[in-house]
Image 1: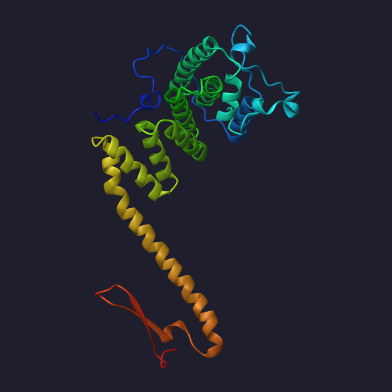
Image 2 (image 1 turned 180 degrees about the vertical axis):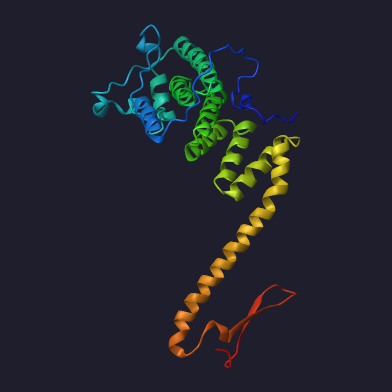
Length: 278
């Protein structure tokens, strides 16, 4: 069955999970400085649980000691632990602690979903990142959804490049994640990366032939891609002509002395020299 893509609910990826009613929040779009502050905050994110039990979640990263912290405690620029760092922490945890982390990550996901629905995208990003820092590395699908949800929140803030990165991480974890592929396709199209967008739309269509956006894109994009390619070809030929004229000028020649003719049978080109052209 085709998935609907006309509402923000498509980004929640919490099918069957009850939603709570929250008060409407401000829809103000934060600026880049605020986004940077969130990333900075996440780079020193506490991994303690609500009871302060650091053992169940891998400890904390202290601001003052960040430079001297163990490699396993360092976070990447986007705020979450790398997979290798998370796995190193998990080696010290019991199965019960890992299961507790999984449950807490799911609760954080639901909290992030509510923030997203209430137009608090920046806070949602922070919560999804916190969840990624404790969601067990073996739970690929759950981690994929967290990346996909964070990408959706970043789309709200028009942080396209970072959203594309999150979609790619989600797809790598869960190759059949239709919503993440569709989001990335839309982001690529918005960023004028039409070939990449077309590839993702085709992939969506292969997974779900009834997906309307994917069907429409396969009609809409090819003429745009051809138009762009033709424009690029003309620009390239113009540049080559200018370069050729500069090289030929000392010899009293120009590119007008050379005419290209295409063989209708083979499609190849031949160049004819005409001395009388100037």
